Image (tube, rainbow, N blue to C red; front, side):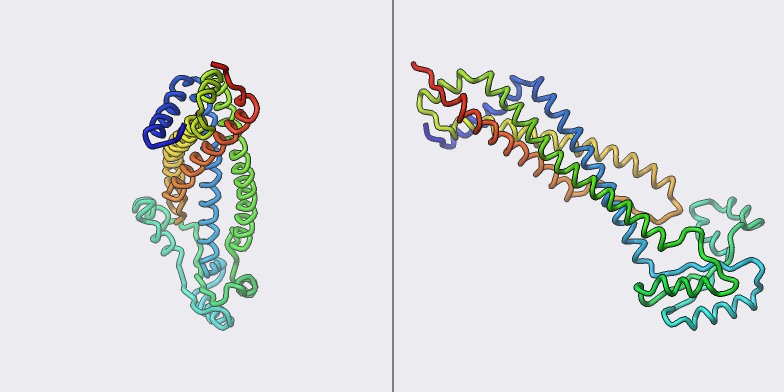
Length: 303
C-alpha cells in the first residue's frame, strides 16, 4: 500500500480523529505538557531578565561617591580635584541632593518633591566616570579612601557578584528543567500513543494483513503526537504571556524609579516552544509506534 498525496491526507485526518476519539487521554497529556512548558518558560524568562540586569549594571562605567554632611562647599572643590587627579577617572559630575530629588519629580509627583526638599534626607554626591572597567574596583577603593567621601549603601561590585551567582543558579535550574521536560514529554506522548495503538491493535493487524507498510501505519500516530505537542506549546505560550504581562506590570509599578527592563515572551521563545512541541510529538510518536510494530504489531490476522 503506497503512500500518495490522497492517502497522506487521509492519514492526517486519522491522526486528528484519533485525538478526538481519545479526548480524555489527549486532554490529560496536553495539561501535563502545558504545566511543564509554563514552568520551563518562566525559568527562561527569569534567567533572561537577570542577564539583562547584569549587563546593564556592568555597562554603567560610573562610580557614585557620597559626601559627608560635615563638609562645606570649598571642601567639595578640593575633593573634586583629588578625584579628577585619579588616572582612571575621565569625568566628575557634582549632583546635589536637590538635583537628585528633581530627577525623579516626574515619577514621584511635585507635591512630594516639595515636601522632601524641606527636609531632604539625601546627600550631595559625585557621579564619576571611569575609562577602564578592569580597574573599576581599584579606582572605587581609591575614591572611597578620600576624606569626606563615602560609598553608597549598595556597592556595585557586591551587586554584580550577587546577581551573577543568582544567574548561575537560575541557568542550572533552566538546563535541568529543559532536559527533564524533554524526557517527560517523550515519555508522556509515547505512552499516550501506545494507549491509542492498543485500542486499535485489531485495526493495525488487519492493515498489515492487506499489505499496509509500516510507514502507512505510523503516520496517524506521529500526526497525533505532533498535534498534541504543538497545541500544548501554543496554549502554554498564551498562559505564559498572560502571567508574564501581569507580573511585569506589577514589577514596573513597584520599581518605577529604577530603569530596569524585564524580559517578556518574544518571537524567539514562540519559535522555540513550537519547535519543542513539534519535535517532542514527532519523536515520541516515532519511538512508540516503532516499538509496537516490532513487538505486538508484527502479528497478522488471517483473513
